Image 1: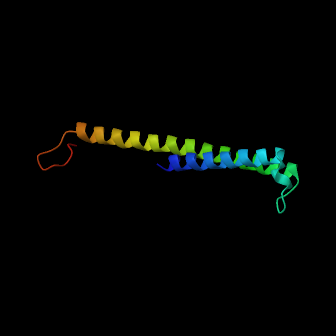
Image 2 (image 1 turned 135 degrees about the vertical axis):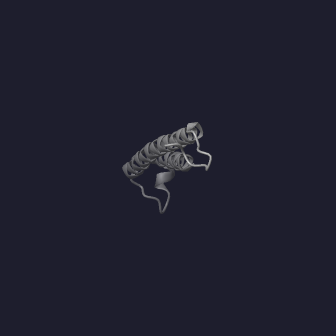
Image 3 (image 1 turned 90 degrees about the vertical axis):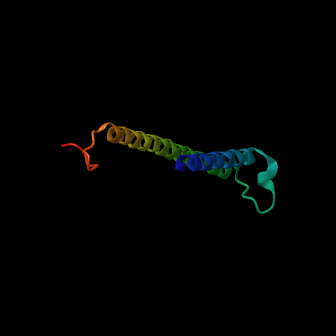
Length: 93
């Protein structure tokens, strides 16, 4: 579940990176109160894109760990179901 949230965060960062990069090429950067240096907007876009990629990598790792945890829990449940039981409910030794 956490990996889905990380993917959403990465998509949001990617969107804002795209917006910042486009602002560098448009005339919006020349509005009053906005940074007028286009290279600054490009740098912001690149930084946001790199952050988005790192968050995506964390999302992939989290997804892999969640899958491994589910698999080990399922395997442990199957092992418990296969083990013979004594009449008092304990495992046979």
